[in-house]
Length: 277
Ligand code: FAD
Image (cartoon, rainbow, N blue to C red; front, top):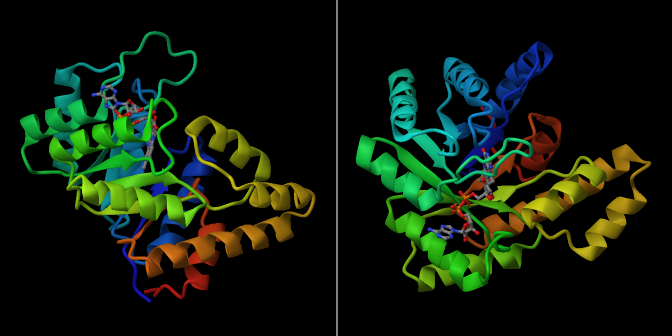
């Protein structure tokens, strides 16, 4: 089976992490992804790390999409970064408001629709722009409809497609896409997929980013915390079933949050029968 894929990394902080990522790029590159994306710490905390990881991806022969946020930088610095990315061959950017890392003081966040406007103003149509979407609603949003309005503002400002926050309930995604279509949004919305490899970190991260773990899944994972192989097996089955539902229901592709690990995602891709080169 063929499916448009993309994989997301964070910039590794150690030499060991950088070496390991090379192997992860090779392992996941075998599934012919459209691109690899690399996260960015709003406030510029990972500026060099993101740029270096993007260079590694490009060197390996794949398309690379840096995540980018305004937080902390002025327009001149942002324009410089965009031009630097153009110079090394980047053609796609994931444009975000970002979150302020704790302890980083008074960084002024700029909404993603304003960043999209800025990128279009400074670099025209050069970049393919991805933005974030939240089928289970962004945690700061007052309501479903205001969240949808702000999502539409990003598309109207010139975003080409979107990647969602992860979720474990396919209905949330399909409902969201349907509501977007009713608002006249017909850009592709790629579901973001989180592999399940660790119960505690999944629960912690899900509560901050507003992703719901269904009660039965939470209970099952809780009961498997002392049996890692069984937890991985259950997680792979659950996520593979979710991906299959999404593909069958018409999702335009899948975007995986890799956490810089290949194994859990390889298992899902193989369960789905995705073609390898
Ligand atoms: P926005 O779209 O700007 O929305 C932020 C909040 O403000 C929402 O509640 C929205 O409803 C509201 N809002 C939007 N526009 C306006 C407006 N004009 N006026 C008033 N309210 C408004 N975080 C990182 O720090 N680094 C990353 O690399 C990163 N990568 C991500 C990749 C993906 C695919 C996703 C889904 C998320 C990622 N995040 C990342 C997390 C993201 O930065 C946070 O969820 C952040 O809180 C919101 O970013 P956004 O671009 O969605 O913001």
